[in-house]
Amino acid sequence: MSTAIEFQNITKTYENKTIIDHLNLSIQEGEFVTMIGSSGCGKTTTLKMVNGLITPDQGDILVHGENIKIKDQTALRRNIGYAIQGSVLFPHMSVEENIAYVPNLWNKKDKKKTKEAVSKWMDIVGLDEDMKERYPSELSGGQQQRVGIARALAASPDILLMDEPFGAVDEITRQQLQKEIKGIHKQTNITILFVTHDISEALKLGTKVLVMDHGKIEQYAEPQEILSNPATDFVKRLVDKERRICHLPEEKLKDCEYSEAALCEI
Image 1 (cartoon, one colour):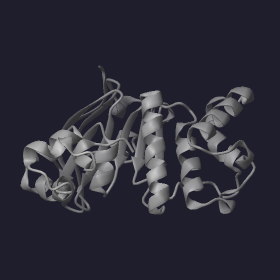
Image 2: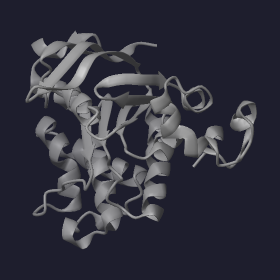
Image 3: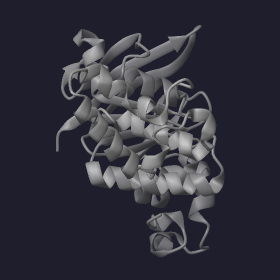
């Protein structure tokens, strides 16, 4: 398996406060990495460094082996989708126009290809074809979020960055969107970095979970490992509630079909 993203000794400081402190991390192609930690621990900053929205003060970031410092930023972002909380759709554009926005930049002469991409991703994220002509103001919060995800994926990127994308929707919609993004990952094997403040969501979705605190990695491991063997007191406090849902002894946590420790299919 090849490395999709590599952080090499990354440091970032804002107003004399270190947000990222000598971060070293390799993310393999096809991983679904959920990122969680204390508020202000550097999750979003780390995410935005991948597509060049934020520049580190020190260190290098490699995407598919190429240093993004010397890579054309437009070419870099062409292969990286970006979805954030609230989706931030263009209000004056229809659903179809919103989803087609990025593909149209690259496929100006191939309108058929763009239309096919729009239809494909609308179907994958659970949007009916008859919604193409609607505008964002005519959509529910969950529908808007689906459009935002479809837009981020419409240009078939290699990497998808997601910054608390489900934070503004109700719990039922959130669970539906979790199922859909997990299904998209299985279907496409795209590399996903997903920031969340919800430990349950992090454990459900991630093939790997990155726990950060004060700009440093506390633990980077599979969800089962995070639950069974928290590496630090910070991680233990973070996952303690999830570990105790079934009231089983430590050695049997992973066998509980109702606990996130079992990583039940959602």
